[in-house]
Each structure stands twice: as structure tokens, then as C-alpha cells.
Image 1 (cartoon, rainbow, N blue to C red):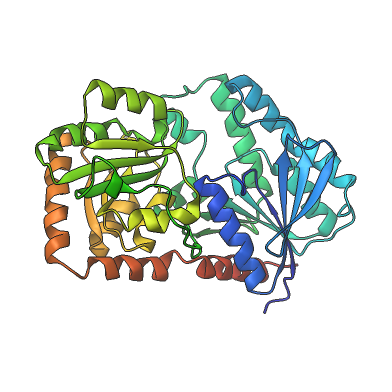
Image 2 (tube, rainbow, N blue to C red):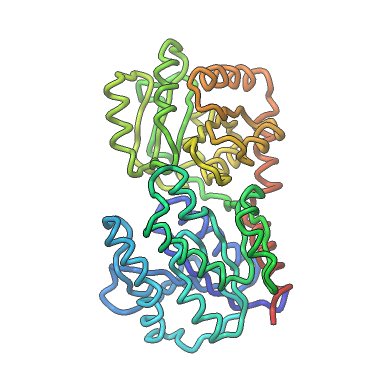
Length: 403
């Protein structure tokens, strides 16, 4: 083991949340513990009556620190709450039993981009290095999707994002296609940039609350989408695909999750009178394997205006469970090359439903003929996306850069 021992992990999501970020951070924390490190997760909480609360999560120390409510708030309120979050957490930390703790390393997870003041405080206090795990390039992607113009808001968020890059010693991006955003940053003395692929641990398999054999899709080949349903996913084309494939009585579509687009997508499905499509609210992450046992294909969708590269967490859950993938994604995304090179699915980069329909049917035919696809999915996951490898890479990078 390296001389690195005590690690602080700062994030804004963790169980009981069920988001992909919360699951990733849960698995990362447990793997640090498994590999012999002493990890403490620092989290903001708007629900605390007291200033701080210590918890034990399967052996991992969790310190929840009182901070303003950000999630679920309106745009302006959320921005203000996130801006205040690190200062509130710093104040609460100074009142906690860990006020004098010294860390060997500080790791933080973005999103959120607002953790930097707390990170800087801990780094300076401990004289240690910091590793930024960055999963999306914000605010760039919001501009790409037309959700934000390059005005005052963009300038503000860019300033905040650049501040966290300035404080980071090491940045781990999720795909090689995102390295280009940090070329000038990497040239600075003492800065190190690397690809840190997304990761997942092995879930505890719970019985699934969704039983498709008792639904109107019983007996069909199921295309499943499980995850966030927001603007960034561009999911409307999947409902167009379902509409085109209503002629196939052996195919069904299942959407599981939640997000800002969930209700609108349900309304679209109802207006189209899709009799081959079902929606379910999000389920426990550990129920996912039993859900996928009932399915044939996992669906990945990214808004076509994206310019940054993305390897969504849902893709990992599919291949982890041996489920081939049908992806509708933006051009020049590293995910397309990965899927096609490893022969674990089909990819549409035109955002045209006719091509997506053809690829969906081709993929089903391929699955029936090529019995090696599930094993290739499993092998790809173990090779590139295991949480064991993620922790080893983070520790290796931090250990090289310890003072």
C-alpha cells in the first residue's frame, strides 16, 4: 500500500439518493475501505437540525454538514444555495469532531462545481494534494444544448469552474475525448491530467419490484432505458423509435427512472398511444440486475448537440449485467468507438429514427445469432470500468504527487 492513508471525499450526492452519481460514490467509498484506506465522505445536508452529523455507512465514515437546500430548488435559488454550500460546510466542519483532522489527500466530485472553497481549506490545512473527478464539462455542455448563452450566467459559471481547475493537482476526466478541454491547464507546473473511466461496484442483487411478465409487455423482447430523464439525454427519439416499432408485436420499451423530462415523455407516449411502452419510477440500484434479466437490450441516449464525450453510468450497468446496447448519441463521442470496437451493440450518430429503427432490428438479430455478446459485455466492464481499477488509479496518481 502507498503511504497515502487518510482520505477526504467531498461530494453533494450519496445514498439514500439513487442517482448514478450517488451509486458511483457509494461504490468508490466502499472500495477505498476494501483496499485498506481510511475514507471520510463530506456531504452537504439541508435536513439537519444540528450543524453536523456523523454516520457509519458499512464501515465508511460519513460526515453530513448543514448547508442550504439546493436540489429541487428553482434555478436562482439553487445557484445561490450551491454557491453558499462550501462556506456552510466549512463552518459546520469547524464545529464537528473532525475540525482538527489532517488528510493525506482530498478528492472531490463534480458536479457540483462549487466545492472549491472547502477543498482549498482542507488542502491548505493538511498540506496535501487534491484530485478532481470531473464527470461533465459545465457550463460548456449547457451552451452546446442551447440551455444557456454565453452571457453573464456563462461567465459566472465558467469562473467558478476554472477556480476548481486552478485548485486541482490532478484531474480525472471520464473519456479521452474530454482531454482537449484541459490542454492548457495540463501544461502548468504540478498539474496532471488523466482519463478516469466511470466505475461501478458489484450490486447486492435484490428482488425487482418491476415484474414485466405481469405487464402488457409480457413475452416481448424488451428495450430498457434506466436512468435520468432530462434535457441532456434527448430521449424523445426513443419514443419515436417505439412508435415505428409498434408493428413488431414481439418488441416492447420500458423506461425506468425520473428527471425533469419524465412527465413530458409520459405525455408524449400517451398522445402517440404507444401500446408497447411502459414507464416506471426509479427503483433501488440493487434491483437493477433483476430488472435487466427481463430485458434484451439497454438503451443509451444523449442529446445530439452535445460536443463533449460522455460514457453514461447506465451504459456501465448494462454491460455489467451482460446486456447489449443500442445507443443514439452525438457524433464523435468516444462511446461509439468503444461499443463498435468491442462488439457490444449498435450506435446511431445521425439522430435519425429510420436509422435507429434499422439498427434496433439488426441488433436483435445479432443477439439471437451471436451468443458471445453477453460475455463480451461482461469482459469489457471488468477490463475498463471496475471500481477496483478506479481506486487503484486514483491512489497511484495521488501517491506520485504526494509532498
